[in-house]
Image (cartoon, rainbow, N blue to C red):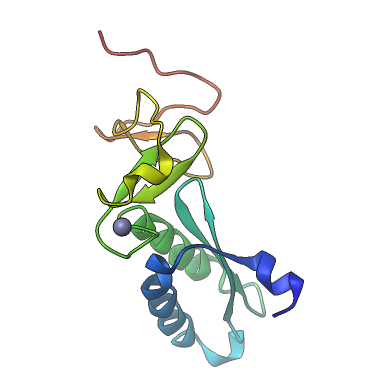
Amino acid sequence: MSQQINERWAFRSGWLDLIQEAQVEIAALPASWKARLVGGKEKFGYLRLTIEWHGRAGRDRIDVITERFRKRSRTVCEECGKPGRLRLGVSIAATRCDNHADFAAPFRADDGLIVDLPPIGGPIYADGSQGSYGQQKAPAS
Ligand SMILES: [Zn+2]
């Protein structure tokens, strides 16, 4: 593998099944798009896929696939593939099962309250509400 390829792929083996499922979906896209999965990285506890394709028409469908696998990865332990959730550590966010949760320790006080750190907007809380990045949600008292 070249250095460039290594930089495009960075996640633990628990997500390999997700990658294989994504490959199947991408292979089912119109052949003229020449779509292919060229990268997958862990970011803020989720899997961010990089898909290349030809033409502009496919943008919406590519975005749907990318977002669906991003959301699914928040429920799969990146380490082992078992059910997991976002763990918020003081210095790291990671999706892990109970057995592998210690990877993110020590935990922030709001670990378990935030279920997603999407790329746009703000953190999504367990109750479904969304905060705003750069703004602390007032602690419940
Ligand atoms: Zn695990």
